[in-house]
Length: 69
Image (cartoon, rainbow, N blue to C red; front, side):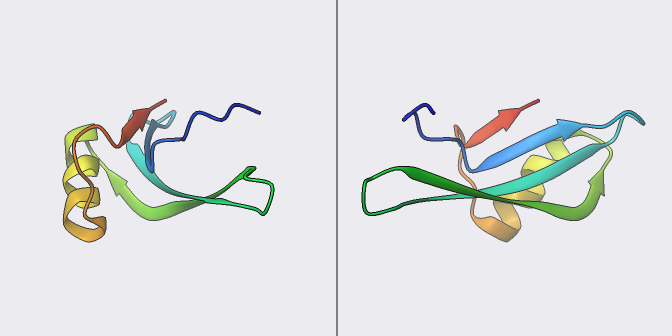
């Protein structure tokens, strides 16, 4: 597994063309191995910009903390 930290917010486009936001939390065990917990949010967004705005408003997201898939 890569030791590159994952970005805490993942924005994914689904097959209907809507966007979903996943919030990821990274913690490290006693051997400094990263353990990532991902939580898919219930909201569905019409655009990636709307998903980013939601992450900023509700989770304090900052530029550069987003990944897209």
